Length: 244
Image (cartoon, rainbow, N blue to C red; front, side):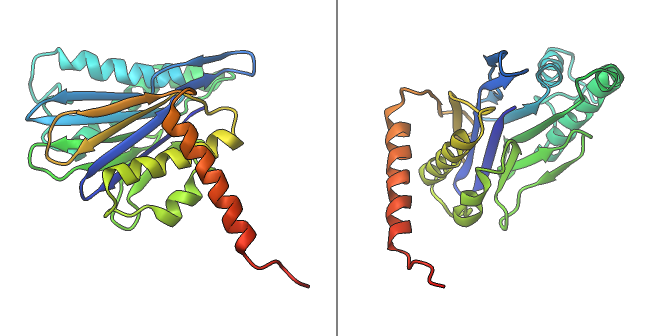
C-alpha cells in the first residue's frame, strides 16, 4: 500500500508520497509514486499515485506516451490541456481506459482494480489547485475549508492534518506538518515506509525548484520525529488526570 498527501496554500502547493510497495510480507520493494512534469514558464503538473502498481504505472506510461503524439484536440496531453480541471479529466479518462483494458482480468483474479491519484499544479495564470481522482475516474477538488487531500493509508496521518492544516500556512510549515503526518503513519502501519518523496511548488513560479527524498538517515526527519514525541508526552503529562 502507500500514503500520499497534498495541500493547497495561498503561497503554493506541497506534495508528499512514500515509496513502499508490498504484495505480501515477503515481497516488499520501493517504487516512486510522486511524478511531475514541468514546462518552465507554462505549467507544472504533479501526480501522486496509490493502489495497484501495475495500474498506476500503466496510467503514468500512457500520459507520458501521449506527450510525444501530434498535438491536436483528438489526443489531448498534459502539455496541451488548457486548465487543471482538464488535466484531471485527462487522468480520469486515462484511468478508465486502463480499466477497460485490464479491469475484467484483474477483477477475475485475486487482484483488484484499485488505483487513485492526486493531481495538482498550475497552468499559466490559473490559480494552483489539487484534485483527488477516484478509481472510477471521477474527481473532487480541494477547497479552503479542506485544503488537503490524501490517498492510500491515510487514517493515521489525518488527525493532525484536520487539527492544524490551513491554507494560510507557509510552505515550510506545511511540509513540516506533512512529515509529522507521515511520522504517525509510519509508526502505525507497516505497509507505508521510507523514503518519502516531497515536492514544494511556489505559486506562479511555473517550475519545480524544491524537491527532496527523505530516507531513514535524514537528520531533520529524525529530529522532528523525536521532538514531536517529546512534545506529545509533555503535553499529555500536563493535562489533568481523570478522576472518578
